Length: 363
Ligand code: HEM
Image 1 (cartoon, helix red, strand yellow):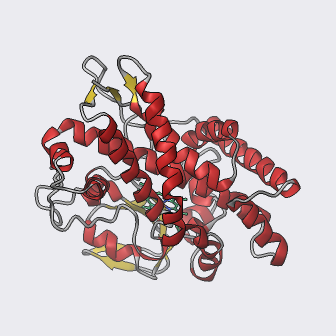
Image 2 (cartoon, rainbow, N blue to C red):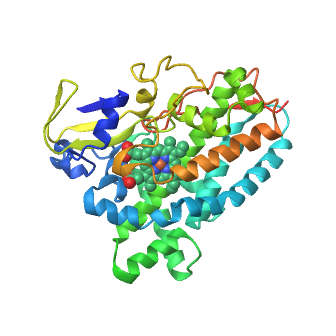
């Protein structure tokens, strides 16, 4: 049994509550070995890295990579993100008729950026994407879930071996150095951290770009507000995060002790699910919550998390999404949803919230 935390204020409170932890050992069901192998979310809740630890271990693992995401480092990445975006738009300009914007634009931009930060070769990026899609899927068979986890660890293990032999100017090499210099993380934590950076670094931003374009094309009056300069692109990014949270839900947290919240008793050892997509549509917090409205004041949301596990890549995600949207609509202001494409299907995932395809035409 899991408690889904769907209201904004309750979620905000619990995300920062020290009586709530992320180590799966706190979960009675897990500790008693009652989860079947191949349970689709097992990998997610046990990956050795900063999302499954608390306190000093969390600070240690998060501290190893924070330097790569400081505002200064993100600002330094801006020209490279811009250049990648322009190259993808050039390639898109050669496509005829209707095409899937998710595949040709929303996916490659964040994947190339995080791939370069981690020092991954292009073929590795594609393989890792396929496997990580299965990792966040809730429709994968138990066999596929187990195979995806093994595949990811094997592939990332080989990336680590290659970087050990031939170090590069990338985050993977920095993590290896931290492990070898003073044993600041285990080999499993090293691979787990790479896995986390890879999945968190692209699946999410891919959804954010897709969801933003979809919302703008569905209501051109909102797009006009930006194209006419009345609203900045950052407003589109923030309102999309609230309206259609790229991370629908984040598994899992656990009650360290009995907690009473909103008249409900969550017992020690029970699990909690952070339901970001629901919190963004909480009518008690956002009037007319189902309306995509760039003029909303203030448009603050929880979709990048809150408390000690607040998204490490928030600055990068915002940079990529703003660059992508400004570039896309700057180049193709007449972009429209494809006329005859079937209604887009949602991704079958517990974590990832978006559509599988977004067919558009540029004129
Ligand atoms: C639109 C894009 C993104 C969204 C919506 C997003 C959302 C989130 C959320 C909701 C959390 C908190 C999870 C929880 O504990 O409940 C989180 C954590 C995290 N995010 Fe992001 N994220 C995005 C982009 C990125 C990027 C580009 C990176 C870059 C590597 C990244 C790295 C991380 C990491 C490492 C954590 C774990 C932090 C910790 O446990 O201390 N994210 N993200």
